[in-house]
Image (cartoon, rainbow, N blue to C red; front, side, top):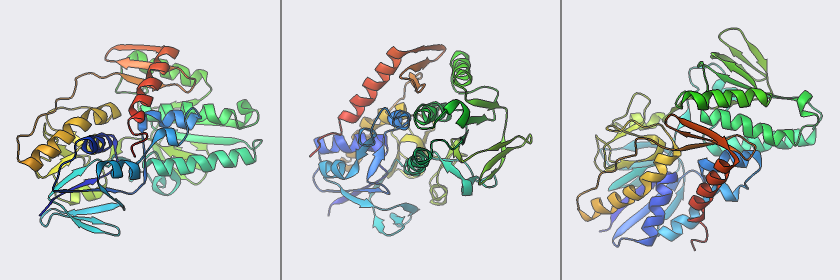
Amino acid sequence: MNQKLVVIGGGHSHAIALKQWGLKPMPNVDLTLISDVEQTPYSGMLPGHVAGFYSYDETHIDLRSLAKFAGAELIIDRAIGLDMDNKQIICEHHQLEFDYLSLDIGSTPQTITVPGAKEYAIPAKPVSVLLDAWYELKRSAASNPQQPLSIVIVGGGAGGVELALNMQTCLQAIVQDPKQNLEIHLIHRGKQLLPGHNNWVSQQLEKITRQRGIKLHLQQSVAQVLPDQVISESGLKIRCDRAFWVTQATAPSWIKKSNLATDDRGFILVNNTLQSISHSQVFAAGDIATMTNHNRPKAGVFAVRQGKPLFNNWQAILLGQPLQPYIPQDKYLALIGTGDRQAIASWSSFGWRSALFWWIKDYIDRKFMNQFIDLN
């Protein structure tokens, strides 16, 4: 009887591992990919897509083509639970059995604690929800370009700042007289933007946002979101047509309910072989995983690097061979687009802004995506 390997989610790690599987398939294994979308986004190019620099197709991996290349059955459905005792995956419309399981389903912004956020704010993830709202906003603005438009973005990490700058780039070309009719507000509870980066990067991005006319509200915590207004704990009230939520990420609640070992935010705890520390038949990679021995930020660069070792360990466990450890790098280069075909490079205590870094970022991103083109 064939062994069953089920892969949930089309994140960066899984995309690379599935491509590797297609290049080096294993016999006597039933490979299944479960995803709630047919097109999986590449996070590195999404801000550029929002700005209008890249098309939808340039920023998304076609999972149907990838699954076909890997020899995997693709099931379009949303996983909502795991029965670890019986090795079953519960989806909204299916129930599947597995021998080995791998999860790369990303994360979601944490909105539960803020009244009105779940109802009225647009979360940055899942990306399909964000993009649907963004396309609708652009259509609305284009149909009435003289209408004043106000947007609030909650969250001053790299995701929130990039979204603010790139949304502004796009909307300035749509809204008539944007200096008068376009307002973008960025709300952040901390004292400085991008707290995970060095001071120069934080200060530079604060300077850029202010120079660009984005209204920056530091040390403000959102207390309530209404249909047309965001209210902070200090009493600050901001009228807005749309509020986008780009705050600290958390994991779907069904992960913790499955009895997999998790950290305090619900992310699956994995060891150096990317196996769950509580269930060795389960792998996890990308944002949904937290490595117990290596504390790293939830960044796409780590998800990309995990793809090849994840594939190697899938095959090793299926063959009954020893698994190989993956040790992530201590430092990583972050390239943060500023919406004007320039980018800031952030590396440890180093930071610099240049059009050259945008060119480097564009080259790296296109190189990543090119490996999933013409798979048939």
